[in-house]
Image 1 (cartoon, rainbow, N blue to C red):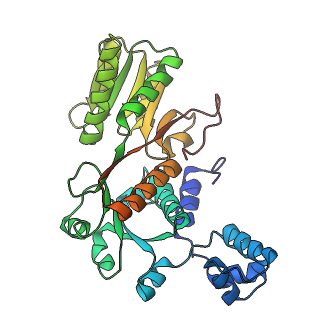
Image 2 (image 1 turned 90 degrees about the horizontal axis):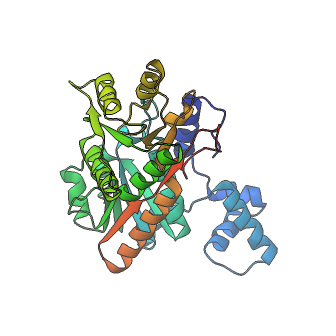
Image 3 (image 1 turned 180 degrees about the vertical axis):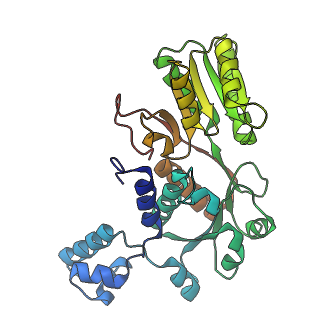
Length: 341
């Protein structure tokens, strides 16, 4: 979906509506294709008792409307079909947040599409309403939540479950590809002329900061360079942290954990002209003026990898690890930018 030219609020609202919009039904597909709902149902269930032209018209109408079969109803009624439950932390997808994590809006929507393409369906509920999934004939589960609770773990015991982090309850462990992402971020800074890139992390994102910092230090050490690192938050102000890395000779900056606007404004106020890239889970930084480069998770590719792992684990029950891919998004002045898909 193209969000260029929109304000941040408008872009997030459009993305949010894309996820929450009422789903098209068989009746909508039938009206568009000019046939009966019974004909649509039979064709989409594999019947060949119609002309090639009618079958093509129905399938095209379904594709145009992004029609998704009601797998929940089918699974409940017949016990057939694969059904994935999703527990989504509302804090991860809240459209009214000051820093909306647009990636998760894309991810949930793309995951549903990927599962439907493979003959499965998904029903998503808020992570604090896990009991709503208990009565459904689920085949697997994904927990899109920062901190799983006992109700999540109870569901996970009974089926293959994908979760973010290294919790042993997850049959499918999902996380950032920290090494590849860090290498890409540093490559961007070096491409902009940085010789001694530094990393700045937030004390309010301890796990994310630690993992990115560990990879940054490994990469710098492998190149025979001294790591330049600092953190901000609580007692250590952003200004103090920034001065600390500049005093160590930093000529490029990789920021992890947000506050990209504050860093950008501070750099402008102090007249520091060094390249900057920000680890991001959405489009927020790209709607700044002027925009900044971001290291963003790729929603479509991430959803495809997770969907494949869920389907495979439903088949063989094996444990898997999924590393989510990133993409460097640069300001439009020097590239096309856009959504990391």
